[in-house]
Image (cartoon, rainbow, N blue to C red; front, side):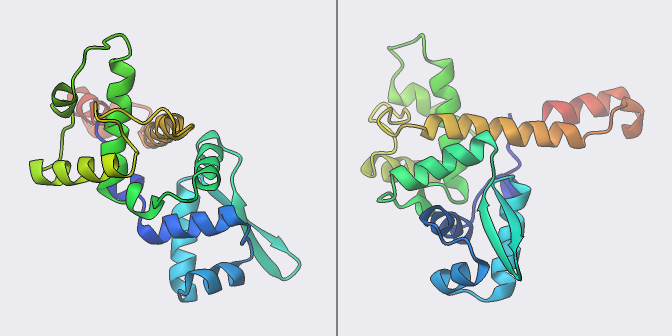
Amino acid sequence: MKLFADEYAFSKTELKTLKEIAKGHHELYSLQTQLAIKPPLLTYTLKKLQTKDLIKITRKGIKKQTTFNNTKHATLLKNLLTNYDHIDWENTLNNKAINILTQISTNNNNNNDDNSSSSSSNNSKLVGFARNTLWHYLKEFKSRGIITQEHKINPQLKGLHEFLTEYQTFFHQKKANQLPTTPQSYGNTRNCNRITCNI
């Protein structure tokens, strides 16, 4: 299934912001200080995270605070950032990285009954990336212990596979909800089916 990469992926600033929120820096001024960024960038970043349903912003007196949302994928991500705060998540889940990890996670689901699947066969199922790009990310994932030598999500990272699954489910449901309810809105049924299949 196609992922909507621009909206689905994380920037490094988004991930750094989430890490600070997980550490307990909830006030916007505190976040801005810890991240050393200007208010417009913080506002933009928080809005991006809200569209991903990961955080919520509330007002306490005259101050605004942000906390993790109660959605399942938000809770799973918070636990990852808290329990494995030694991991460089800014370079593990940013940009193309999360798309590759999501495909690996999906392949893990499909290969649960096939214990003989090799790393080369798993690689052949990763689509949408140049060979050199894929090689670079897989090398980095293995060196950080994110994936195994067989190119599967490391089972010792409790919650990573579950987060990737829930996050993908959330995004696909969000995109499905944005589709018109009738095929006529696209002019013909064939076009509607094509767009639906790309989700």
